[in-house]
Image (cartoon, one colour):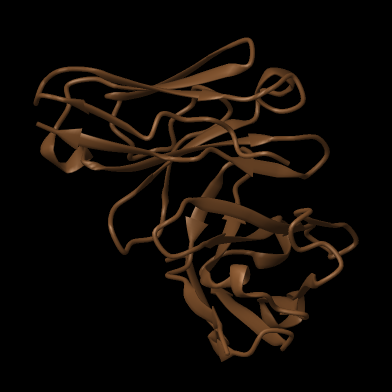
Length: 110
Length: 118
C-alpha cells in the first residue's frame, strides 16, 4: 500500500486553470474506477470533491472536474478562486475494501 | 444534519493502548460502511481501516494491521478503533468518516489528536 504520487505544489492566478495529477499503479488507480479527490483547508477536516473518477457531490462547484487515463488520475480546477487555496488529496481503491491516499498537493492562488 | 464526533484521543506512551470512538447522528448509521483516516502533524492523509455495515468485514492498512482493530456498535450508532502497541509514528489526528454510497468519504468528523510520546 504505497501512497499515490502527487506533485507537492501547484499554483495559478485567479481565473486560470490548475491540474493536479495522481499517479498509481494497475493495482490501484489503473485497476478501479473508485478514485476520489478531497480538499482540505488548514486545521479543517477534508471535504469530498470528486468520487468515482469524475462525479461531483451536490454542492461542489462544476469548476472542479476529474478524469483518469491509465494509472494516472487528474483533478482540474477551472476559474481558480482565492478560496481554492488548500491541500488536495486523491484516493483510490486498491483491491477489495483497501484504499490508499495520494501524497497531497498544496494549491496556491497567486 | 449528519454529524460525526470523535473522542478518546490523548497522550500515551509508546507501547500503550488507546480506544477512539466516533458518535454518529443524523443518518442511518447501520446502512453505511465507515472508516478511520489519520494525519500525522504536517503530513498527508493516510487511510487506516474500514468496516462493513454489519461489522462482518473489516480491512486495515498494513501499517496498523495486527495492532489496530476497527469495530462498530449499530445499536449505539458508534464507531471505534482499538489501538494497541502504539508507536511514535502513530501520532496524529484521527478522523472518523462515512463511505457514501458512491465510494467516496462524504462525511468527516472534526478529528481527535493522538500523541504517542514518552
